Length: 269
Length: 150
Ligand code: SF4
Ligand code: FES
Figure (spheres, rainbow over the protein chains, first blue to last red):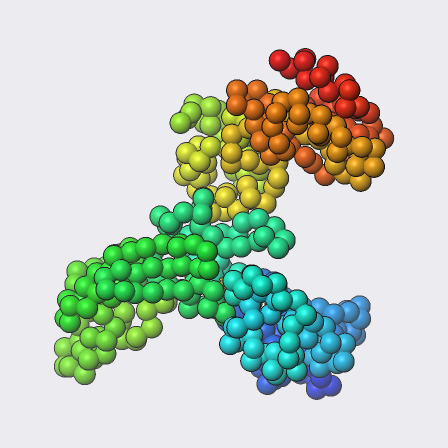
């Protein structure tokens, strides 16, 4: 069992396993800390700075980023001091600068008492540079289709050489984890398009469902599922069946083998 | 694509981990830029995803994806050089070669770049051509200096 450490969050003494982040420990205690770049399924990167907290006790008194700060014996954490609230409001204003219409961000803004932003840029690309899309593509899917380019204000996500990606498998996880809708996935007829504000990242032809005939997933994606989820178990998928037909089939006595198992969640490979 | 050259460079780095920047430097020095096909080959050989390589190239100003001239002229526009009139030196070179900063001459003999502080402030205004550093350059000297490279 992991060693437990004692710390205080907002005056309450708690215990948390070593290696856990302050954010996770706070969440477990039901303490709300706003986050944007954090995602349960991804390695934290600490890019949005929204999750700042004030620490003291066993660490020098300072503002720290809670999603990458590990818990420590004797740590004293405060999540709602005046100083934190003020800085957090500033960060939200800065994030709103380019993403003024994102629902997730606007909800957070409302919750933290931010009404307008002094940093409107007029370049509303909606992206907050949180890097969730890059991380999910790299660490969870293993496709490495997305990357960062440039620095500072010009930093943006793109593909290699900023052209249609050869490596994208069309799973749509990037659009799924994006907190602002800056990456989009669109199926039209038998075509899938994944795109951002200024670039089409990838295009695919969709395979048809064997049951209902509806085009539903790109070949590359189905191949990947086959390889990762089936071949490892000595199975192989031959017929592709869409999630909807899977759901219907589940009520039948003999379940069909499908790429999506029982669930309708097509994003976890 | 020049595979032998790239292979030779890769051969110098038995350990790929932590050496990508070194590899890219050598490739850039040889070709005067980083050609796409060669980069894709490097990606395949080193098993470093091309997106990561592309990201790194975009991060550092030193790397270029556009072909550069055989002689790379870097005019320092850091604070000291700026104060000492580097702008005029840049203009003189630009006029002499008939190219703007960030461009290369049609015959690909020269390319012109502005840089921020090369750490030679005592020599301000400073100009670096390939590996050679010229200090206290006046606009008048530009023609003489460039002559050496023609
Ligand atoms: S596109 Fe979305 S997920 Fe990717 S960095 Fe921008 S806001 Fe984050
Ligand atoms: S959630 Fe911690 S920095 Fe974004």
